[in-house]
Image (cartoon, rainbow, N blue to C red):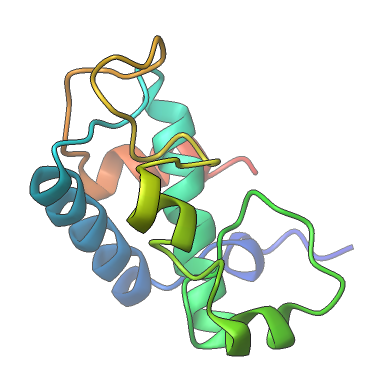
Length: 120
């Protein structure tokens, strides 16, 4: 069993890129991160890991039979089509203000993400 945290975590470069993208996208679309910062951290980590492994930030909250095919189709690459068209984020990363799970934050630090995802 591989217990190396680097095997499950994205590189610092990709994590920082997805953290920055997420903050900017939330601000640009008037959406907010989940009230539970752990949810935000896990989703951003998952996006960063997919960016690293697959070349695109494929939604980490869905099951795919063929991730490479899904990346090529681009439907579930973040921001996914439902988010772009209807502001519907299955991952609960980008939530509209009226959503019961929406927090008040549109930012999260790199360290907050690493701390929340270090035991995954």
